[in-house]
Length: 449
Image (tube, rainbow, N blue to C red; front, side, top):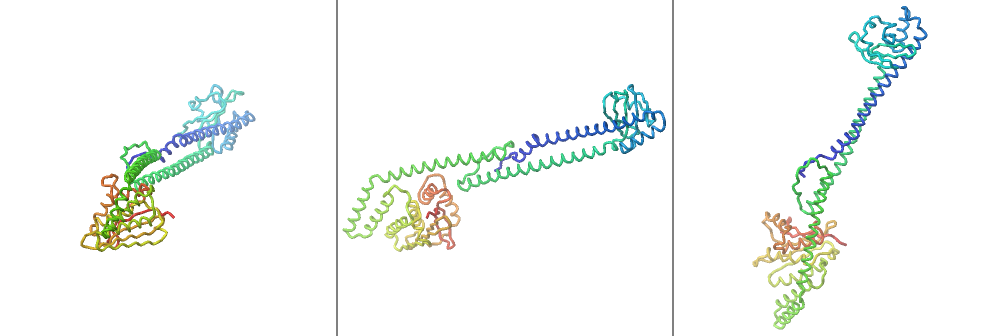
């Protein structure tokens, strides 16, 4: 359609990402971090409580070498790796330490606050370590444990990484599902747009109007534009059909003004020809009278193929006066096709066209009509058995037959237009050259049982 737009699938994906998926991912990450911090504090608090109780029972060991060994063993069993234990007063003076070297770094303990449990990171011997502490309000002292972060939080970090992986995987899965679903909607709408456009072009021979690029549009906007444009064009076409039908009815009424005068005149001519034994004039007047009665006899526009062929035979009888040698042949594949509906004076202009363009006074003339059915359509082919050589004119003739203007609206164009108004745009008249190189006028009608 040549129109730029942001596809619905990308709009839907962006909207879902901004409104749902990204908030979900961010909230999940925040939740995982909060849970991780809570688990770390709970882990530290639980193990420090155990250390406190051990200290209560072994407070006498604080001043000898045995206590250091005992606490090292206890810490290793609790934390699963080498750790250092310190006991500080409320003023942050060291009462006991399992590592005299680390006790000398007073800067490590400046962040201690008199709260139940907390931790922070320190750099000891160029290695990142975790300083964990708990303030005991009963003894007014700090219990401090220093250990490597890997040894303390390994299990917690592993669980956190697993939850992070799950959050990322679920976010990606939601994104993929959203894209696939929005792509399905977008594809369905695109197919609908293509079908609407294809239908309009094939049935109404109507091209799209030039549209200005609008990236903010999507398939819903395009489908709405296509539907509105098609409906508007259909309404205009219907108005044209109604107007043409009214004009045809008016012309028909005008043609019926005082028809009896015409019949009486033709009858008088016939009587006069019979008196003077002029058979050609008698035949001509009788044939003309039948043609006029057929046209003005009733208000119905539709008749049967059988009655239409009868009128053609009358018309052929009239034209035999002009043509010295005239052959008229009708081929019908199924007899019930004779009762199929057809508009009045559909065949006569086509047969007349053969006399006008396909006949020379120096040669005989053969007029052939073939009627057959193809699925739900009835096809009537009219041709004369003479070779047609001007192949380049076929496409031009078909274009002229389907012109919208009404100038020179007679002959094939008139028949084609009336058939389309009555039966729809799929039906009408086309011209072609068959395998025998004969110029053929083909009429397509709906089959009605």
